[in-house]
Length: 199
Image 1 (cartoon, helix red, strand yellow):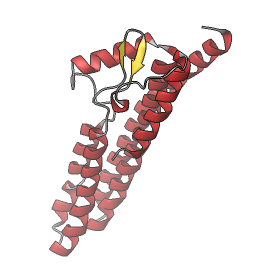
Image 2: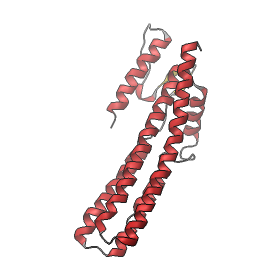
Image 3: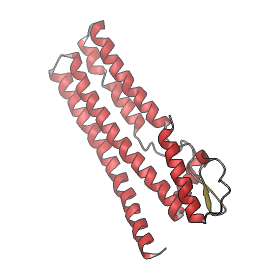
Image 4: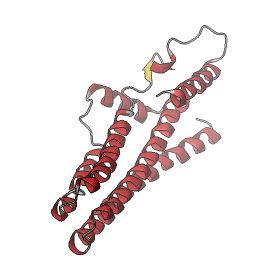
C-alpha cells in the first residue's frame, strides 16, 4: 500500500476498533441504567405507565448499539473491497461457515430479556386491561424492532474469488473495459445503492 492508502487503512481500522469497543460499553451502560430504573419504579412507584421510562432507555440504548454496529460493518466492507483486507475476508468466511456460532454483536438477546423483565413490575401492580394494552403493545413493538434489526444482519458479505470482489447483491460483474479499481468502485457504488433501497 502507498502512504495515503496505508494511512486511510490504519484510520479505518482504528475506527472499527473504537466503535466496536464503544458499542459494548454503551450496551452495558444502557442495561445498567435500565436495571436501576426498573428497581426504582418497582420499589417506589406504583404507576404501570412508568414502565415505559425504562423501556425507552432500552430502546435508545439498542438504537445506539445498532447504529455503531452498522457503521462498523460498513467500514469493514469498505476495507474488504477497496483494501483487500485479509481480516475482513477471514471474518466473513468464518461467519458463512459457522452461522450463529459467534457472539450476538447487537446484544439482542440481552435487550429482549430486559424488555420481558421490564414487564414484571407491572404484573405486581395488577393493572387494568386498559393499562395492559398500550404497555404490552409498546413492549411488543420493541421486541419486533429487535427481531427486525437482528434479521437485517448480512447473511453473506462479499465473496472473494480470484482476487476480485463479487458482492452477492450485485449479481454478475458487468462486461466492461474499466480497470480493476474502477470496476470495484462502480460495483461498490451500485451495491451500496441497492443496500440503501433494500427492505
